[in-house]
Length: 326
Image (cartoon, rainbow, N blue to C red):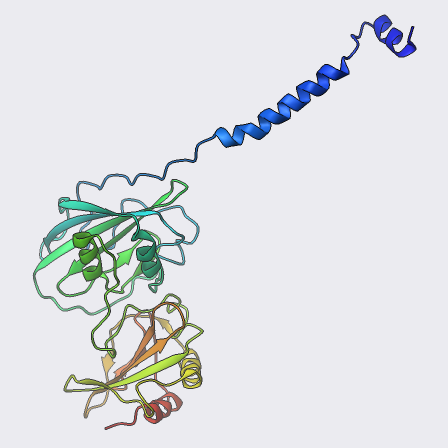
């Protein structure tokens, strides 16, 4: 008798049938390999329904709940959502709050580009003081629910309003860049496009990072516009409509060296004489431009919509070289 087998019998342990064990292992491995192929991919998340009312007295600047997503502290819409549900709440700016839901539209193939543009807007956690006109008229508040492939979602609240004085928020950070007409166009047509000013000298929506620097890094060109008290704004570059990368980066460095702090479009007039302003538009290889406004007759005299600072002689001399006074 085989001693190994005899010892097992005497100890009460049943002998192992190795052929059966190997076959079972092969079957188990086969099952493990086959299982993933039989699991269906999860269906894309379906956007939740719109709230029946706009539950805030503010124009824009409200969402049903802030999202717990990576990146919401740095961008209005982080990541790449798969759909965007737009909910519309029309009313009057003289009596804001509790507007009823008027309709909705879902964007799918347009959601990525919409998120890209909104994600590039300059944001802040500060409540920026700003001056607005007070024309009475219609307002339409909007909620936009961005849905992500993993089932998560994020709300953005904004509005279109006759005074263009709106704050857009995701519940964590906010932007004073005005995008109301672009949202209205997307709601009506189903196509998203971030509308740009017709005049290249008019302020744009700005660029992410302007809450940290007057001009975010990476500018490759700059357009300098001088606006006189008559209201006419005309590009006045010394060589063509735009200056190149060297001038753009030198000017950006000078602006970023200012002692800046959070602030909006308010200022205190100083001095007298003819009033004029300078608008600087910094272009980049990718994404929107960053704008800076310089008003020598005001304090603070420099602002980018999120930060403010004061003009110095070196910066003023640089402006005069790039856009000589008329």
